Length: 69
Ligand SMILES: [Zn+2]
Image 1 (cartoon, rainbow, N blue to C red):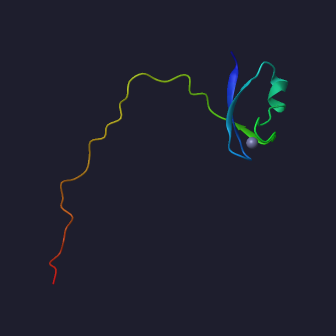
Image 2: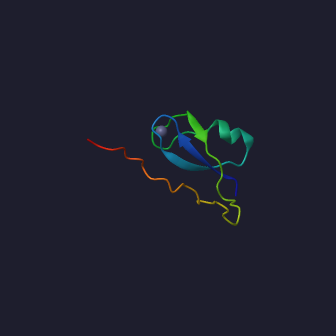
Image 3: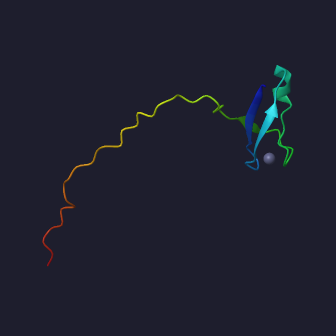
């Protein structure tokens, strides 16, 4: 179903709205404050498989404390 996720710009509430027609988007209002100033969030239903995030790194150098005193 064409359900989009929105976030209210006024109170920051996130909600989902069923958008059947294009014109429905113009009538989307925040259920909490009835504000019309909302932003559509990116759909996160699709996710790529596999995580190739390499976290390796970082040198072995010491903090380099100089002679104190
Ligand atoms: Zn709101």
